[in-house]
Length: 457
Image (cartoon, rainbow, N blue to C red):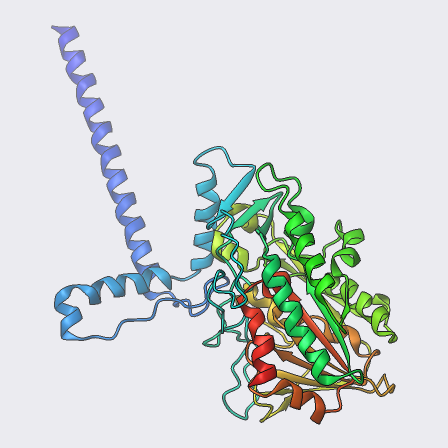
């Protein structure tokens, strides 16, 4: 009997402990839900993201969406997408996902299969051309100076510099677009540039600077894609062999001795200011103009940069390994005027813009405010009668600040947006030197046709 009573007491005690534990769990869960509710509903909403271009907008109320349930669905998306500190939550979620399994040495994103090579001078075998550009600070729709701290203009969506379809590989904490190339299109690019030399004549110097993508230097260790770096060499050779009356700037070999330096970003699609410096130095030697040493520039460093590659891959390898964003501020005195694409409504500003911390993936727009403007630069340091125009894609943005002691006037024009006839513009402004500074994707892809478009429009 005594033993039975003791068992009942023990069982009763266990039940009490169980009920108390259960009650505590319920209370904790309720408190957490309440805190999350207060946090989500009453803390300030996020208006900008480090990585995403557009956050979900609060939906417009209509009876149709109300009764269909779409309104409630969009409201839920709005609160989830604009929750206070949302980027940090997303970063942590990405880092936790990695713990689900053994991380791969190489990560692949997008379509990594080689595109079909088709002989097509109209470039119909590559992606549809990208009319919008990378990382624009503003579209310059009026005469006022833009908000240079906010790069979230309507065309500011970073594109994968002309072609994303060829996929991304992350190797050794470096994200790289795969470049399969197209030698036929590369020769077409050379033909477009040759047309400038033919039309402008011997009185104007023409240069071609085709800039390799990072995979030309860093993909060799890949088990699956280690040999595609040769595609870059094949296209560059095809271009060089096809140029007539145009001087080739050998960027590949100019950068090769510096491949262990930070000449390309690991987390972004672009090269760095340092990479642009070495390539521009090679150009200055071919153009026979003076060139300022890097030691004459003020080096500025912004830490914890994570570029557009994270936006598209959401890879923990990138978010856990941010890099420095380094700019080199020229010591030469100059003035720079930024115009609309029809060369009207100019405003003055430094060549280097400040992009605020909240938009860190757009820091590449530090250089000449992205691709929104035609830029005219007048240098007080140089007086040699040489005037340069740079026809470029986004890879050409960091070049001009390194040439202030090389040319007395520099014009920077984005081939994708320019609204005037390029030949007339060259003649009217007394241009002596024309530089085409574009990425390998532009030279071998559909965006190359803008070189011909602006010549003939």
